Image 1 (cartoon, one colour):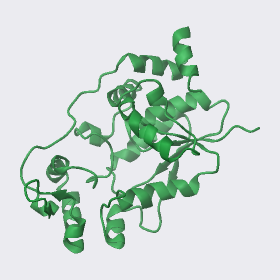
Image 2 (cartoon, helix red, strand yellow):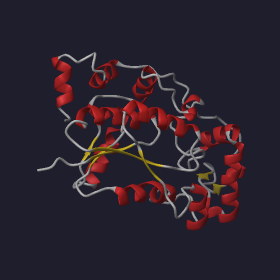
Image 3 (spheres, rainbow, N blue to C red):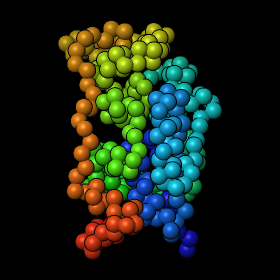
Image 4 (cartoon, helix red, strand yellow):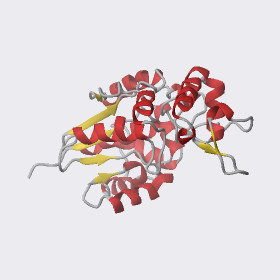
Length: 269
């Protein structure tokens, strides 16, 4: 029986990059490993540089998927779908990423997720909701956290995405609608053009598109009315823990792990 295809969802973030590198090391010789990325026009342009650097690190082409209906543009999604975020999440995630990736996948594909050790509950939730969809999460299996992944990228000689260097938690679109008030204060300060573009969308769509609520009155307010307050960025410098020492030896041929480490790696092959 032919081995299933292994599909890595590379999101231009440190976690998905390390998860992909581990998957290639574990399955590259026995399975057809595919690396896919959903292009988004609203990400920082440095994400493409990071993708190219990681592609060289992987030693394998990254298949870039691009939505055509909305031009891979979250602003077009918001305007045409007439909302920015709902009870089931953001339409941009569904239409520009999830639906695009789902149309590309084949039945039986094993998906590689970049969930980190801090996100084990997200993996449990996914498996509970999707018992028939096989997934692996090498970062969780190896106890790797977000900061571990950042440090491993640096140790590989790759500069982190510009959004990370500015202090943001991830390399999502500039002005991700899932962000809180502190996050959008940072976006307003660092990316005024992109912030204004989102404000214009809310001007057009009205109160139903407002992302935040006044804690005292419980009334929603637009980004234009976002007041002063704390600016929330992740300022912690990446530091590698014991677990990334183990994980790096999976893909560094000159430093093969000892038996105890091999047992850990074998547990999720």
